[in-house]
Image (cartoon, rainbow, N blue to C red; front, side, top):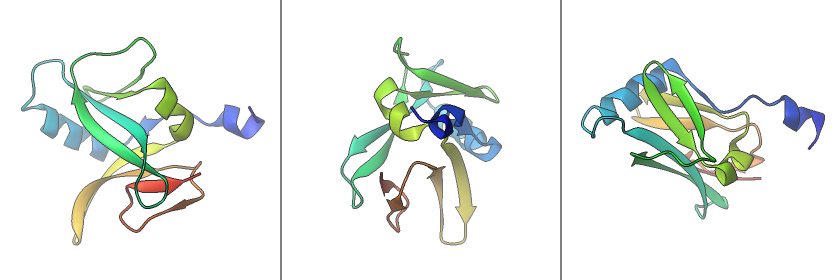
Length: 115
């Protein structure tokens, strides 16, 4: 691992993202968490997947912000180190956006990337 990779912080969640996650999880069972993972596919090679989880695996990174928990599995974390998860609400639409310093390119939809 290079010094630059070692210096990357774990995944962070913005205040806007935490607020939106809280809204989404309010309709789920108590203790529900948001799981973010990286899967193969998408127009650039990898894509982000979002889902609701009620259990935490022993190798999950758990990010806590403003009363919500976001889980990232160990394999996905390798692709997401240093990422910032944000939620933006713009005139063209509202969505989660992941700013990934490891990505070498991405697609126009913002949900897939290449390394």
